[in-house]
Image (cartoon, rainbow, N blue to C red):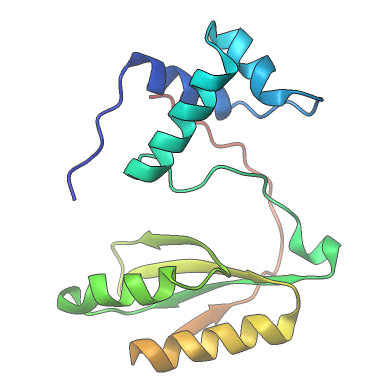
Length: 152
């Protein structure tokens, strides 16, 4: 799949949204005004960026544990010629929040978040069964908060 092309407005939207999303009655309208565009344009651009794959996700991040849920970091060592198949399997689970390729023996890393620890365990088991490769789970020992902003 070719990389989606971003124009100046797309880049301005992505850059602005990396700074946070307002918590107010009309957050899309507030962001649109900051960017000098209409709310409809902002929403249409976001939808297009998601459909084209320029954005893979737009939404809040929750502290699953504070809501009674659970999450974990997991990794798989995937042979290069099997990588795309395994990625499709892993990404098909709605509990998978992130999936990243790494240059490491464990070359696929992802986060599983669910409503309870038993569901996290079940999803990891099913991914391992469906992929045919061992899934390694890395439990959180300490939590750090890092602001990540990648200007486009």
